[in-house]
Every structure is written in structure tokens, then in C-alpha cells.
Image (cartoon, rainbow, N blue to C red; front, side, top):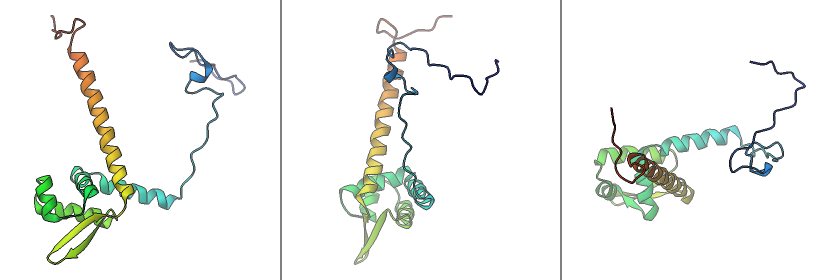
Length: 156
């Protein structure tokens, strides 16, 4: 491997097909890179805790249910087909993370989302997962068919 001198000029990127103009190059030295605004470390820690609290399929499903309306535990059990103790456990996690708020109405506790931002996070994550899943499925279907549109077959 050749040694690189500290005063050596950086190598210019080579042109790639379809990227003939300098402004098309992702790492162009002419591109003005703006640093992202810095956040307070505590804000980043709290954001990470929030994302961890949302990082379970059942909790995501609960947030999606609460996005449409307030629900009590038995309504979530019916809607999600998950056992009541498991729903209650996930609601405790979401409540301690500040995602949901429970209010007692007689013998029932009715849960609602604390903030609509939380629903947007979950809806956007689910939409992204659906898009990438569909793209993977299209790619797998394209790989499983031959150039003439028929199924590929292996030959020995």
C-alpha cells in the first residue's frame, strides 16, 4: 500500500455511471456540510429511553390502538389478542416512560397517549417497516423469476 504524505492532495472522486456532474457526487468537496444542531446529553438519554420503551411489538400495537381513541385494558386485550397480564405489563412500561396516561373510571383504568408526537414516531416507524418489507418482497420475487418471467431452476 502506498504511503500517503500529509501534504498530498486528496484524490478526486472518479465519475460513476449516471453521476457525471460534480453536484451529483455525494461526497463532493464543494458540498457545504452543515453540522446537525447539538442536543443536550440529557435530552439524548431521555430520547433513547423513550425509544427503548417503544421497542416492543406489543407496545407499538398499543400505541397504534391508543392513537385512534382512549382504551381500557380489556379493549386492548380484545383488539390485540394478547393476554391481560401481558397488556398490563406493557402498559406499565409505557406509563413509566411517559408515553401513556391512565385515568380511573370506576373499576376500569382508561389509557390515552400523553402526546401526539409519540403516535407520529410509531406510525412513521411502522410505515417505514412496511415500505422496506414490501421492497424486500419485490426483490425476492424478482430474484426467484428468470429472465423470461418463469421460475429459475438450478442445474447441476
